[in-house]
Length: 411
Image 1 (tube, rainbow, N blue to C red):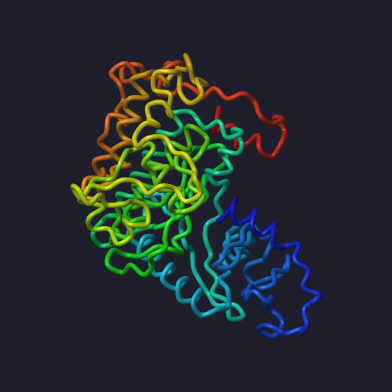
Image 2 (cartoon, rainbow, N blue to C red; image 1 turned 90 degrees about the vertical axis):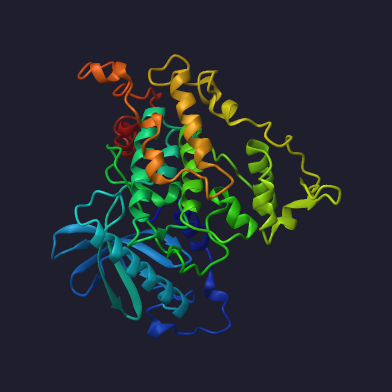
């Protein structure tokens, strides 16, 4: 279920030659490597039921393999957790949350991955998931990082807001804590339906266990500042993701937390004083002026230059009045100035510094960006209507290649 970065990481670590080890220690009777990961053998059967096909992802938690379920006669993804207590404990929380969500979403309407079952195998907790397709980072790579159309971005946005609305139901109150393109997967390479995966860092409101959460590019100001966080951190991540899906590049690509905060301030201006006043880590990024107790950005230690606060406008990043990102959408149906103004307005509400006033999933779904225009409403089956117009993407791959299927979603 888990792709891109973890796959890239897996490839980097595969080359390690452990033959120079001073001692040849057996881990878990020889079933584990020295990293406490289960040694995957293609063709092995777990529980006389799941036939292991191949490794599809690797992460700090363990590994994900593709397998065939002989009982149900279908392919599945199995997340094999490391044979180490902290990873087991965290995965048990993940199982509990997935079971709660799946129970509350019996009709499969809320875009959350299905956990089919779990079991122990040779001291490893194994989570069996439905097998999904590519993740949104793979999709971006297939546009050569030029981004997907505003129409496809809207389809993703609506599904993701619906998923966040579901997570916010009082019985769940679940914070994903690691929303990013790699953790959003297509159900089918030819369709726009998606699901959220990897609840391995997630928690329920009031059960927060980590201070260091969220991948840096998608990390909310309250987490950067050390302010207690709630479900609104996922909405911040979503705002960052939606801009990236359309422009093709991360909105705030910080190299570290200080760079991250500076990149946010370039676009959104300074955080409000009442937010910084309650922030443990405010002094990591800002100096307080003795005269009026106002805040200014610290001078970067590495001498890095940033634009003045709020001068790298989202308006320009999106190309609201200049034909979209890089002018690449000029004249394309569904990419009018008015379409862009609605998109920009929604994103700015998602990227509110104040988690208390940041748009909630419910109100995000009411936003004009998701409303059919009168023009589209009258126009039920015309191929050229703005709502159904295909995204124009230059063919990037040969029609017979494996990626061709995925690219149908872009066309």
